[in-house]
Length: 273
Image (spheres, rainbow, N blue to C red):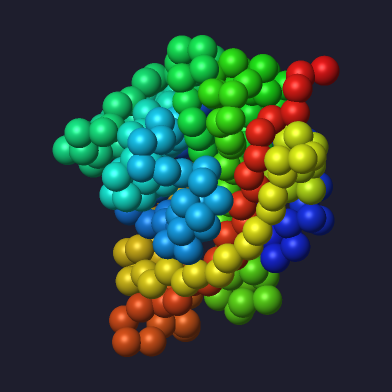
């Protein structure tokens, strides 16, 4: 869920909202989400390690973990990770994919009520999700579960509208998603994120990366968006046809290159007011 102006995160215009509105939004989208949503660049994890936010023995809570895309990248690097996710369909996908990892566990819970113990966590991560949360409830909860020197990492893959394919995808999302997509676009406001953090701990950085997708991957990427019609519906079939034509227009050697700009915010939450 990114915005038409995602190439300029500071211009996004809406107040982050409660996770309750998103709990069921992706239930029918879980397979497409797991198949085609972009992962995150290796340089992000290198930066978090260099900043000592992540370290070998770190206990990490990946909040609103969804199908486990970010969780899996943490586990692959050897961290102990608890996935927190309220959507049963998405959590089932994560469990099936990540249950092989000895350092993985999952909890069916929300960002605002994680069920984690007091002072149990070294790092809380939330990828592509913070805009759904009740910010003040999350602030209180995360300060409760973080260790005294624990930190939060908030990450988004944003879509640069200077790229022709991203612009074409955005137009298609707007056409098929209508008012629902427009409301989701307004939901995100990365310019408000710094206020969540204590000023003396706050850092923000950006990275670029590119996702390679085949025809089915591009279709799954678009249909994973909660505002898009479901597969099997008349509107969904029309969207699939349009996406196939879009793939033909931009593909080279059987793949399209989809660029992203990863925006990360780190720090400790400011004290609750």
